[in-house]
Length: 195
Image 1: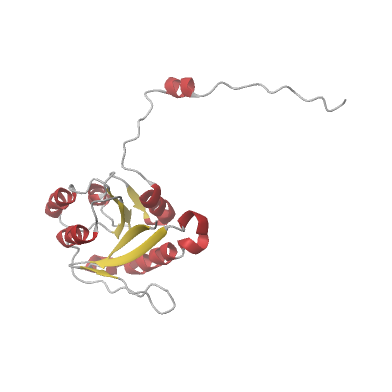
Image 2: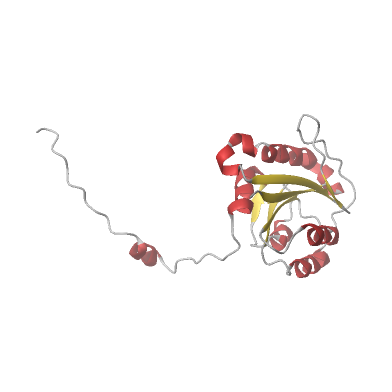
């Protein structure tokens, strides 16, 4: 059964600055080629691309399968994004989303966004910061595990979205606890090479 991964590309006006819109396209190109890079690992991954500003719409790939050039304008509307999720996410299974954005959206929309999506316990949202001026704090708030990936770590962002979990990790209390949990080393008998 194929897993559907939604990659949401922020195409709001702020993405025109510092070449962020071009970086977005290259990140999407990498994601689109994943099945060619590692067929076994990503064979069940159905990656779908959507652009997002005031509305969310599917990205139509070019005839050669390439990602089209994006046009950035307007503002990123988190309400439109949550409405899209409500329409496209099913409540019977895990839904995976990777948002590529600079995080330039309104603080007031974040609470509403999170409240609307709380009805989907199996929704996994990861964010990748695109641009040196990214608002990491806001991107962290819309991620379901409070994680933000940098754009140069796009491979980790995609893997974290597909294979990750939102279950909290238990951190060790001390170094002593880590050492105590390690298995004891076994000493292998040395072979006699001179015999």
